[in-house]
Image (cartoon, rainbow, N blue to C red):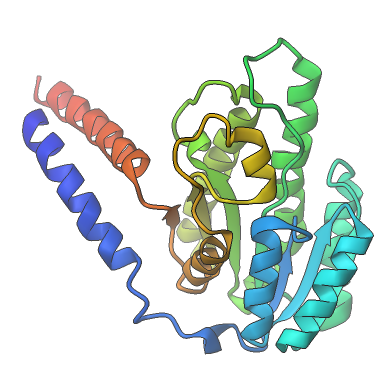
Length: 283
């Protein structure tokens, strides 16, 4: 049984990947007029998501730390055709900001259709140095602020039948060396939002949660941090941003991008656990 699963799972994974990336069922018109918050949107993937949403005619409210960068992104969004574009700047270390952003969306639009949680705090790529305070701070930014924004946004999302998109990482599915603090926050996101998704389903609440599990993406921050250890260039941030939006619009449970060997490794690990469970029951 175990051998059979190990042979079949990679094949099934490739078939699912093909189906998952089929563009036939996605229409940009799905986002026209939608009210969307995008965090961490001054650069990188978040910035590109804002531009895609603008081209699709959505209302966008973006957040990040740097006001000048946000102003430029908002200007560009309006040029690209956004129904409206606004920003709020500040650090997500401040839980009040997370709630204030959601309140601003309600003030601007009277509701919310999509919450895209994408911001992260600064961390290092090295051996864990024992700095517990760094982990605490990173958990506040990368995890607790996500929860705070979700709690604030849920009433509006329940009303609209909206979506929550959580940008995570393969480091939140498989332990990877040199990113222990970052990995801890991403595992926390998976645990919380995967559990919350099940609770919403049980309660028959029509709010979807899409967990976006990303590999190496060619953002400026990522290239500076890990380019010296990566043999291959990162996947394009523009395409990644579009896949995130598409997956949220289609209310997918999870997005793996790019779908490569690490995704198959996760599939195999899950198959191995399933195999052990079946063998234990049989015994």
